[in-house]
Length: 347
Image (cartoon, rainbow, N blue to C red; front, side):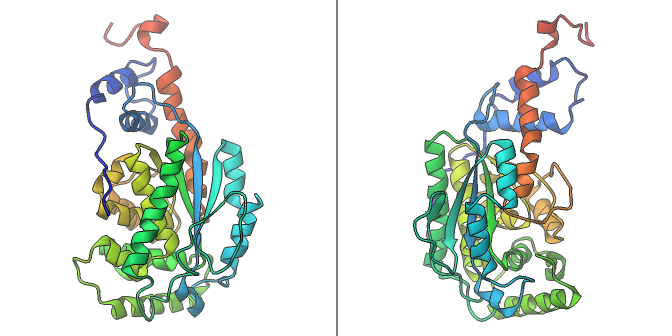
């Protein structure tokens, strides 16, 4: 498994910074928007970066461990929410319509047969993972297949002209999987990685902590375990495909808008496979899940928003999209001191 991802080069940095600094504004006065403009300009290797054909891909799968009661919702909610999304009724559909994103749902491993459906890609590896409480969630081969399939989905979007991507997910129990991945990848204490997910009460949270502690003890992974081994042990098919989607998107020069806890757990894995993937990312929000802070710290991210969100599906990234677009708008449309005939501070 090889991904050819190079960090965006600094060739245009000076010219981009000059363009930013010479807009009709005080130096640095647009704050984070200036950082966005510089980053997207570097990614696109352009002084006038623009987004084309924005896409949002929702990867869905079930987790074998969810049957042990790791979530406040039963496992069948996964396929029911996929149906809701295909019908246009999920939260992510509302935000995608608001901001002009095309939405594609990928069946990465849902324990349900949907049949051929418009807007649904059948990439099912299996009908859910096995329970990592008893054994590895997937085989090494299954994990590699999921990563590659996620990359293939995104490469096809790039071939159609997409250069900005949101990756979301659906899968009952996936905050538990993300907590385990976060603990192993970042060395953060496990309890600091575990949150209430879909709304567990105190008893449910205590059970979740106990079960995940058991999973870590059972696996006994070595400290130098590689990303694929860790993903195969504790991941979900949707998380592995999301990691592949990030890798495939960076390989094609896409701007990757990073959502919350689940998406960032996939990015942790992707960054272990190809560290340069981080240079293509904009961290859109800080999740209310406690483990997200450890993820962001590990990846060096600076989230744009902190709204207490924990819905998943890519919703936080979709909500932040207009802010990212504002960074390009001022770069491309705001007058310079020279073009506006306005005296600069040095004049």
